[in-house]
Amino acid sequence: MKLIFDKSVKGRRLTILPECDVERELLPEGERRAKKPLLPEMSETDISRHYTELCKQVHGVNDGFYPLGSCTMKYNPRINEEMAALPGFAGIHPLAPADAVKGCMEVLDTAASYLCEISGMDEMTFQPAAGAHGEFTGVMLIKQYHVSRGDTKRTKIIVPDSAHGTNPATAAMCGYEVVNIDSAPDGCVDLDALKAALGDDTAGLMLTNPNTVGIFDENILEITRLVHEAGGLCYYDGANLNAVMGVVRPGDMGFDCIHMNLHKTFSTPHGGGGPGAGAVGCKEFLKEFMPASALLSLMKGDAAEHIQVRSFMGNFLVVVRALTYLLMLGREGVPEASINAVLNANYLMQKIKGTFTPAFDRICMHEFVLDVADFKKATGLSALDVAKSLIDYGMHPPTMYFPLIVHEALMVEPTETESRETLDWAADVFRKLYQLGFDDPEYMHASPHGTPIGRPDEVRAARNPVLRWVPEG
Amino acid sequence: MNIPADLKYSNDHEWVKMEGDIALVGITDYAQSELGDLVFVNLPEVGDDAVAGEAFGDVESVKAVSDVLSPVNGRICEVNEELLDAPELLNSDPYGAWIIKVEDVDGLDDLMDAAEYEAFIATL
Image (tube, each protein chain N blue to C red):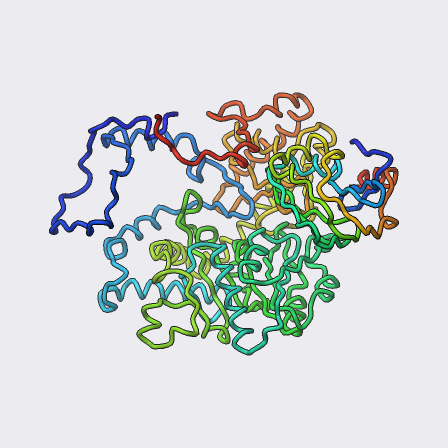
């Protein structure tokens, strides 16, 4: 399809912007740009059609099944949007006086207290903009803690080899040396490898539980005890919280701080820029290092101790949506959602079994990993080919080639918001594709057949990305 | 799977070829086929120490970034800068596209020969 710039017609206008009702003030000479910006000139009709056309070329949760492992692509209830659109929430200004935004402060406080209850933490901040930002904030808390005690020999963060790629990246961004430890054959932390890695240079451990292969680490209390004994702190990556929310609390597992992805677990928009929100929680003893609004800190005169990772209170309207979700589910609904997420994953795994093989053949949590290696040996078709073929059935592919400890991995997370009929249909599609791989591998290798773009040239996309429209001539 | 008989192999899928006292190091055909199309390579500096089992650089494929571990001890005396512009050589000619050259080589005896490496990848 044409780019919006290709559709632009010189002089075409639309009238959705209101009349300016304040006096026009020009920037001082020298601060103004010399040339007009290159903006597309279009009518409202044509803009509307342009974006509708774009919508038809993507696949979202509202289009169909989206089992993207580790991303928790659950349905986002419409009432979240209704609440976030209320003028009292949508129309506030970050510099409004505190007594004019008491309702908004109550939203933040209430959401914080619920999330503290769910995570087993004592304090919560909404400042981080998304998950990796939350990780960064959490590990900075660990760093501030050690530094505040003068314990500067702690230079290493331990990360299991099954971790999300963001974990080692976060540790490195915070100035730590990353120590990778191998997983045990069951995908859990290898206690001997952990013991060998721990020492008086250990700043902390970053871990998800359930882990990235969808298995709850049964040694979790032993793991966090070992780290604490070595003087390190334990960071919980909340990416997989959807498996256990309201059932088990990371704080009770021995973790000292945590981030939660409101855009995964708490049903706020995810992908396409979200925006996300990476709420970060911590135990009482880390509270003094938590990010705070720079403004509030200055007013209180204690800006020095706090880290600051974003302006104001973060993505406030995302918190409104997450709180709406929590209030709709209530005390009984929160654990029920997790229990159903686990049930759905196990149901789908059992229905696929006999064709594609689970990498770990045991009861899983909210997601499971298929190992396509045997299928590849038999047919020459890879996890990528299976993923591409699913697109023709109107299913978003699962996460591919992650975790790295499974070579031909497809990571499937159905979430609790899918019906039994959808899961039966999805299992059917997987089973059909397994057979198709033996019957017509060429057809499958050329999939997808029914999309505007078949197989993008990934090498060229990585090496020579074209990210900007440039006018001709 | 191409496994030349005259090379030595590590269980992290690097190969070593001795040319006089200098060791040429690259990634195996199996490694490039598992990684998929390579798009970027990060090389070490000449003069860096190579430590067996530790990363001296990394390669990025369309799937993931992976460390490349040194199969031997020694000192890096040359890096193949051609790969910076043409990482696809690691896919098309894995045993021609050496990544680093190492001098003062030590630890060759711990590596596998071609038959052992072939048996090793059959178990994966």
